[in-house]
Structures are given as C-alpha cells and as structure tokens.
Length: 333
Image (tube, rainbow, N blue to C red; front, side, top):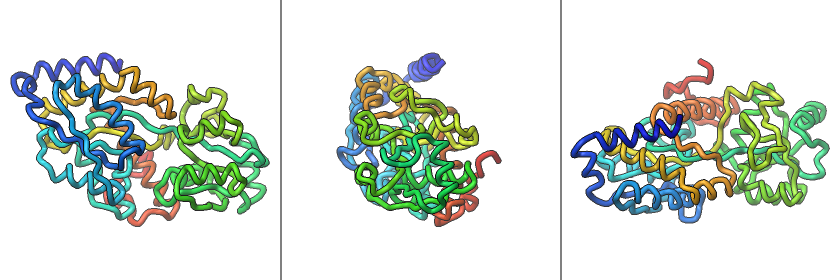
C-alpha cells in the first residue's frame, strides 16, 4: 500500500506540468532544529543525500539551535512559502504552546515526511525486585513511594511515559529522580541509584544485550524486532492503545502555502530516500521505527501524538497552559 502511495505522489510531481519540472531551480535550505551530532542531525544528514539525488537539486543543511528548537521553527515559519526553506525537526514543537515555549507548532506546516520515531522501553536495575511490567506494577502498589524512576524533566520522554503509566493504571506512586539526559540516567540505573528508567530503545539496547539492565516492556503496540523477547506493554494493559504508538520523531516540514508541486516532489523524494538500505540500516541500528509517512497519514499521526502527550502532561501537572486553550482535544473526544 505504501509503495502505491509513493508512486502516486511521484506521478503527481511529474504530471504537475512545467512548474514541477522546474523545481528546484535553486538550492534548498534545510534548517536542522538541533545541533551537530544529535539524533535529528544524524537522521537528516543520512537521508537527505538520497533525497537530493531524486530531487535533482541541492539541499544545503544548516544547524540552527536554541529555545528548544523554536528558533529554527520560527525561521522557517517567517520564510517565503516556496519550498526552498525546509524545516528538519523533531517532536518538540508539538508541545511549545502548552509548555509556554512558543505560539507556533506543526499545524502551521505541511509534513513532507515523518521519517521515523523512537520506541520507548522500560528498563530496570538488575537487582530490582521485579522482572516484568506486571511485577513492577504489583510491587509499586504494595510499596508506594519506594520505587525510584529516572526522569529528564517536564516534557522529556521519561516524564511522558511516567504520566502515561499513571493515566492508564490510575496512579503511579514513585519517586522521580532528575537527570540531565538518558545517558546519565542509564548509568545511574546500572549503579543502583534508580530502579526503573523509561528510555528510548536505541539508548538502552546495548546495556540490555550486555546484561547490565533488564527490560520490562516495550512501550509500543507490538514487540520490537530488535528485542522480540520483550513484550509490548499493550499485552499487559490494552488501555495503552489510547496513546500508543508514541515516541520522539523526526520529520521534514515546509510552511503551509508552499506550492503543491514542490510539496509533491519533496514528499516523493524523501519517501523513496527513506527506503534506501543505508538509511534503513542506520534507523534499525539506533532502535528507531521507520515510518516514512506523509499526507493525511502524517497529519493523523501528529494530531494523535499532540493530543495524547499534551493531555498527559496537563493531567500530571507538568503543563504551563491547558491544551484546551489551543483547541487540542483530549484523546478519545
């Protein structure tokens, strides 16, 4: 089905006439929302050369950091909607409004392609008195306020997963221990400073394989092919289907109002580039789930992601502004 969609997009780009044939006439500026060497930068610099070959043009990438990605987003939002300024970003803008970080999000952009998303996983210290998700929940219920969960601050992956567990299970009475990122938190987990860490699969998989931590559940609707023996959390509680699949994601966006022919050609190029074996190998090696979606499918994913995450953070008392203020519906409504 996806191949048929990509073919249709490519056909649209080719049949759009003289204007489509001319795009791109000049260099395309790719604004990367985060710094060099980070996950977003790595993903975009891996896939874009393959897209360039298909576009028949050049994409000059520039890292533009600051304000949790808002500087890059605002730069592209203020540029001309002509297809020559492209935002290469992650999920953060979907939370700007509720976290008080900005007044724009991806609703002002067209998703050229949502390339991939990270898969969260719950891992535990090897000495933790539980080895499965169900055992963890039973232990937390029997020992309130005892289990130590790692966290990386409001809006970060651990805070969202912790809020998700509370929403689905009806409360999560644990101690949250703050860290500056996944790396320090997973080091703390191995040293016994914390008992459980919600982390992205790519950051935890080597530690799991080395026997330095034990996996409890993949926070997804299905087990990961990279750790097939670890069950999906939906097997323990199907209430998670309201929020999953979820995870940090990477995508290419253009400002709304960009000509349809430019959007179509960009979408077709990135869709095919995402199927390049080198890019697939990179995504699988880092524990990312390949998505390569655009159009209505991408819009639906963004809407579900924003609704679920915004309301989880609101209900956990972590949001500065209510999602209601911005017309973000509660999941299921």
